[in-house]
View 1: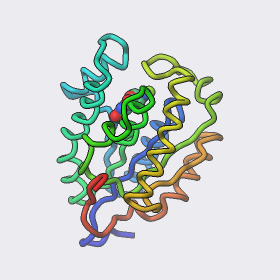
View 2: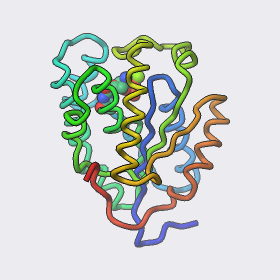
View 3: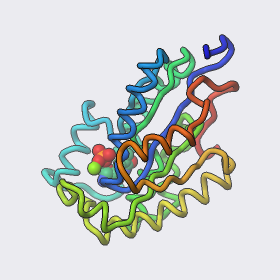
Length: 218
Ligand code: NYM
Ligand code: MG
């Protein structure tokens, strides 16, 4: 099926706690769309390649210390520096698949104790995802995966606090933007099983969407 000339690319975000299988699924989805002849691009957040991203990377690897508010704003600034390119690509009919977005920003920072509303504000009016897929995995499974614990935040207590905040983020998305924009997915099982589950839930949104790009939290 071809994309009609009036439609734009879909902005699809994958969210979840650490080691839930997100990055694997995001790259498989982008590969599949490209095999099917669609234009798709992967956008990872944090984007560790920019100047701001390098500061975030140093923080996550515990090579640098930073005030909680300051690092929160850097994560948001890292999205803002990518926002124009995301909009441009969507308008040119490219499907943009993001590995994390502002929802991780709120959930992880609020889990550290920053006020929820403070965490939400800096991302206000960023491009609004057309669809967010929130992958859930029991903590025992995520903790058992290789590399769990390598970076800052990868402790069981931090993950559990973040899981609670993600539930509040989901409520907020549904309240402000409607329930169609947030889908929770059970991420248990094999890579292929999860891939099929995601494929079924995404449906035809990757064929393009009509209407303007929305603004987050607006
Ligand atoms: N993270 C990610 C935040 O704390 N705030 C944000 O805004 C974003 C996008 O960074 N533990 C956290 C979540 C992860 C960590 O992400 C690095 P990844 O997907 O492992 O590179
Ligand atoms: Mg990680």
